[in-house]
Image 1 (cartoon, rainbow, N blue to C red):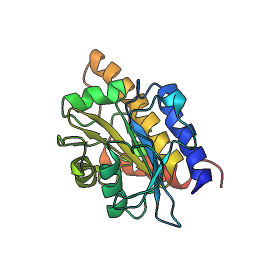
Image 2 (image 1 turned 90 degrees about the vertical axis):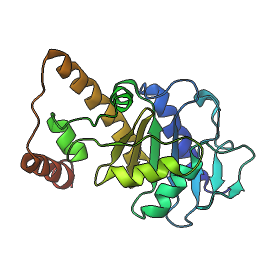
Image 3 (image 1 turned 120 degrees about the vertical axis):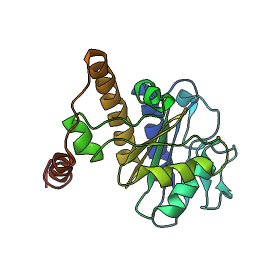
Image 4 (image 1 turned 135 degrees about the horizontal axis):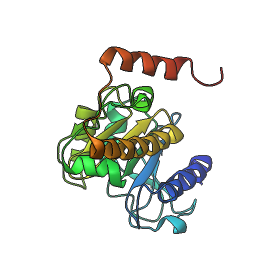
Amino acid sequence: MLLKDIREELVELNQALPENNLVVWTSGNVSIRDPHSGLVVIKPSGILFPELTVESMVVVDLNGKIVEGTGDPSSDTASHLYIYRHRDDINGIVHTHSNYATAFAALGMPIPAVLTAIGDEFGGPIPCGDFALIGGEQIGKVVIDAIGNSPAVLLKNHGVFTIGKDGQAALKAAIMVEDVAKTVWLAMQLGDPCEISSENLTKLNERYTKIYGQH
């Protein structure tokens, strides 16, 4: 079996999506690119998360050819691969329809940087890209065009894509997007939240990425 360790990790990461209330039924997906072979492992299409197995994960090359797997890969595979081909620094991608973040996407509205947690994780407002249809590379193109230096982007009328140096980093970004989106939405019910200056957002992000945690 090819990339068994990555397949095992991918089952866990995909199952973490419903566990963290980021998706329902079969929506959403996670993929991981193996930095050594360049092959990508992705969730199969239309399978319930509790039913995912190591064997059901699908391995494809960067052009979408199935290398190993008996099922069809996610309908978002072409867009995942487009992102990987255009971002050598990325080895993990997560797509969700989490409620609060997707509410902003339904409005075509970025999530404003009104929390220190947004500065920490995202370095600024979480951008919202244009509308794109599902099934081809179109969504991937929107992600690349709109995401900038952020690990997350909203897709108008659709949902959330997050990226990371590995699958876990992309999952963390997806969880954090929904967490801050909920808080920002709640703040908007009370009034007009105060945005943090770009200078302070930069300081927050640098501290979080370079100083925070164990070294």
